[in-house]
Image 1 (tube, rainbow, N blue to C red):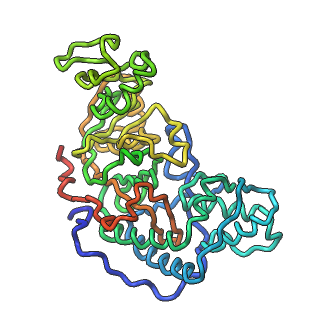
Image 2: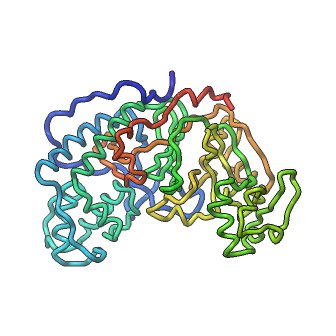
Length: 422
């Protein structure tokens, strides 16, 4: 049985559940804080001091569509009653403040069920409001610090009918895709997040960096077939023009400092001083970066069959994972705590975390073909709900929610093949 349904199937039909849910239940899971330590990005974590842990329910689970049906009914009710109020703040709001804008903030948080009607000063930012803000931030994929800064305020002031539309678009996508079986890795582009799933249970969750708006990560289905330890990085031809030539024009020492070597098509090394960087001469050469701390792929590259020359990989620039905006790559996917993911992928090759660390520390080049290769899906899901009633939203970063072809996700199961397919 294919682990994912073809998008070409007839559109999903469903009926909204009767009645309106007036409040969400207490959230059973919160996102973790982004951490810089590699082994700290486990799927169980904390956010904003909360002791609750994340749910093991993946986005593509059997309970997602029914939960979204209930959410659609709730948000239709919110819209029919005029939506929610804007929060009229031109500065950050945080614990201890007292001002009129906080009354609107309380109303906004109550509208989606993040805050229960509480006693106390309606203009005071107290601990109840702080906890509700954190809950809101978790659901919207914002760093959960409990204060209302620019990004949180912007998310709060998007109208309710816009959020309802996101749910209506995404329930079609999720329903058409179904619930994959077996072992798989799912990259959700709008969330810039990776789920590692086995037998319907979430076993890992990773923060990711994905393609920028003008260099989008493609939507595809494949299998993770090979791990490259301490890889070389071969600069793609497109990046020679877009990035490398302009960089060399500004900083002639860039290639040397980055340990990138230039070669002719026949393999002869060329010194950078011999290249005319004010022309397109560089496009006739090959550029290869040595393994090591400077390597753009970090210490690990994860390959899968695809026509776009993209892959998952480590990165030396781990600061990207601490940002709410993680759409910075040229299409490939950078993975926080990639070693934990690699350990899971290579489990049936006899690898554990110690062996993975040993291969990385050695600095030696090593390519490992994956036994029992798990499936990979890169998808575009900007809104979903879990069976505990929690509704999640992300920015429509590539504007696919606005497209009439938004359901056509290129999820072609024929690309997946069997676990032994290269």
